[in-house]
Length: 309
Image (cartoon, rainbow, N blue to C red; front, top):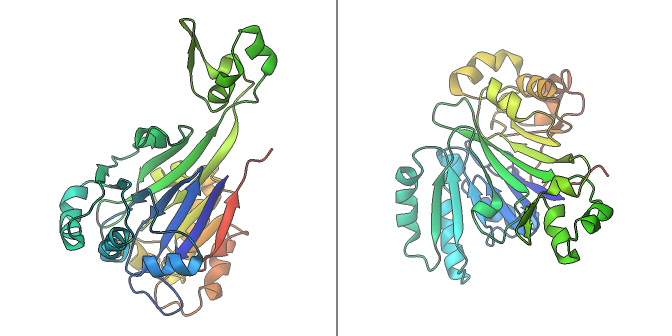
């Protein structure tokens, strides 16, 4: 199960009723913060999630409305006595862009690990920490903005149904069954046992996609294919703003709806609304013309994504 909370839905400027766009997901005790604009701490507190204990911060790009909340968050972690290491991921230029922010935060008693995410690069969570779940994967999809940018795909692989009779036939002790069920290989008396040796066909897992700022692009459509939830930027509501959206590296509601349709996603939440959109719901029909179940995201909106069976 993936728990996801949309912390904010605004673009560029935080509004009294709309924090800057950010997301928070949790899986098997590991939490990931997606972007961290000004006021993200407050938005997390309002939404009832623990932003201070976040394990990984994944930045889509380095514009201020996506990173200016970092110094305050790091200082709060300091004041709360954090000692656990923190990972910060982002596109190329991560160390250069974050150096001033880390300087502002001051000396920290915990390790801050920076890792650039190349175009299309993916990593399983156990590559960041050996105790984190190996079946969960974070992949960086190259997107189309005015600066290097990424969308993030958080996916969970699900092994086929475990077949005890096959495990018993191989002489596997029960303490090893759980590792094979999670998709890991095990060694027994010099033999390598693969998950497929004791399971049926792999079952559909879970997939969540968070776009950051982007115009429509083939890499994003491909990366979002069959997602359980696509959280997509939709800066402009009116179709007449499509030229402006293209110029500035953003999307209209209609473009987000078309992308969701073409990717065959199951749910679409729109966010990153321009401050000019007084009520984003007024423009929702433009997205629903292509994806009928599209929803306008609201601050604190949450969902638990579960396996189908």
